[in-house]
Length: 228
Image (cartoon, rainbow, N blue to C red; front, side, top):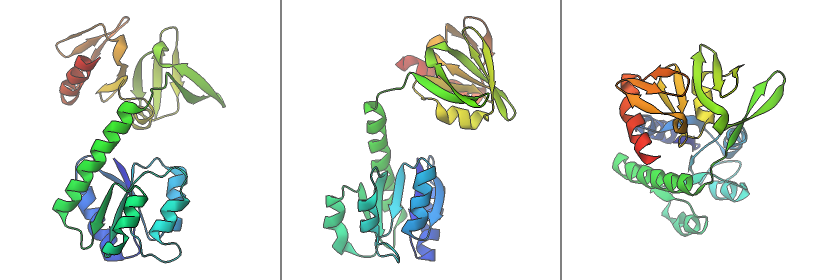
């Protein structure tokens, strides 16, 4: 869950950032002092949740939200309860009054996670990905891919007919792939789940190779396989 915090009050920013950093699954991508800074982040990063103060200089939070064509989920964080109806009209997912208590924030996070899960389940899956290759964007069908091998700051994509080296780290490339179809099974390997022929002990059997399963990845892999 990737978040940004937008608040002109330093103490409010610091407290909310501290809380969110302590919640598993939450990543604070940026802490912003105003709507202009937040807008710049939204143009360059994929954000799930916007924790947005209302009474701020330059642009107030409600006007900022109205200006966004495709906003992420929004939680209003404010010292004033008079904006609650406006928040409802703007379809914000929650409305937190300052000073924000951790138990109340945790309730909001559970709402957010539930909504994100619903959105992910409803969204149609792509069947391909574009990667940078030889000064062009190369289209790869997921069905062509068997597994991804990490090579320090590069990855080797093992396809049905060939292998390709691409200039991505494993972390970046993993985030580009749909988790319903691909899974990290080892610090050095990501597999295309439908390509798995069998799992034996701590090994995954594909058509052309067996790959090791890292101990910390095994339970998640087995849970994913049951859902296919």
